Length: 612
Image 1: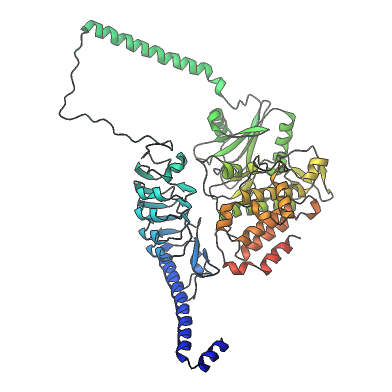
Image 2: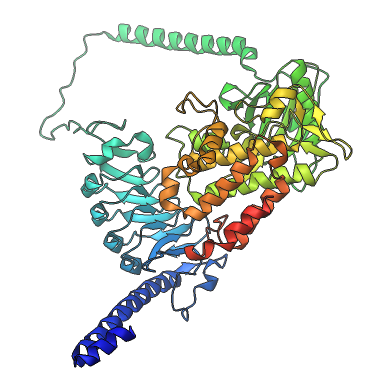
């Protein structure tokens, strides 16, 4: 800089020096002014929101930049706001139209809150927006027509609100969409032609008055014939006599009575065949007392007799699971074990482990029934299904599984396993950690279930030798070879769970190369050549800072090591994940992030070292 100014002065060109300084000042004030606009827009948004959890506690007017505020991510280069990520925070109020001034915004995620009012038309000014997720709020009114101009949108989710009116015709221009959902609103009219017909019925279900010309499975749009008021209906003349009419009426009445009687007799004869749970005689029901009251044995018996096939919510190798509803009590999940030696052992294992354990990430055993004909286990019913259904379920059940949800599941499973391995005496090996045995509630909190293969380790035991069990793709290699089980077999299975959360692939995926039998083997090969990031789902790579993905991938690769001694303990895994939370790197629960540049260097190394 001094050389340039000296040259200008030497050449007698003070006017050039003035222009140079002016240019620097102009750039400075342009950036400062843009940051001020971004900050002002966010403060206007904050002023309209009720914040029961104190998420906006560090949104201060005195800050020079909003880049360090909770839920805000800025560009490393321009420092403009690019992400607003505030899901699952119980926020309420209205969405400020000033957000339309954030012209560099790429992601706006306010899903699973309670925002009301209309969607601001000004959001159509966000020409760089790629993800707009306002799912599960109380938004009302028409969908703004101008949103159809956001041609770079890849994800548009407005499901589970109270939106009315037609779908804007301009939405046919949204050709970049890879995910689109307007289900469970009050929309009417015709689905526009074009890009929206690429999505199936799940994107529109729950809108009874929508129709389509062709494609997604909704009713076809057609004009109902209307009887002209000038045309009078022709009165039919009857040629039947009075006696014939009376006889016909009596015959119809007697025939109807006969049909009704036949139906009741058939139902009575088939009644016993429909019973799913036959307790017989000599059985007993035991319910564990807790904070909440539990049904009496009489109430349980009455409810169990009413269980039918349509109450089935899951089925495994050792039993069938039903949903049991009793008026005045929370619903329960009932597991009916099959009659075999393995089921008998599974029943005893569940009672020995879950009967005495209490942890927020373990499914709660509420009671049991042991009889000569049947053995039942009663658990808290979890309406979120299991992780397998969340990741790979049918389109009708799918939601956007963004980073906060995945991280919350990973941390919950790790805490549950750490409690089994380090917080119990004797220690417990789960033995069958898989995506189908991880249950979820409506807030995506995870719960370990199915302790039928669990084993107890005393302080003096280094391992137990058992018949190899578990789910293919999750079983540690040394356990499959020798049947010697330690806590490290659960650590290996947890590593596979992390890979599923990162990749969106199953533990055993038919789409993988024939050279690899499972997901863990493929990732080990990629990791040996420095290409492990290729396994991460593309949507995550596009929307989540790479340093966060690298850290979770680092933990997973340690866990699936072929040598048990190289795998970390679950206690170390929990410490590492919580270290990410403490540094602001993880989005667990609150989706709070710091500026990307604070996530590199010493923090990355500290997390890696903590696994050793």
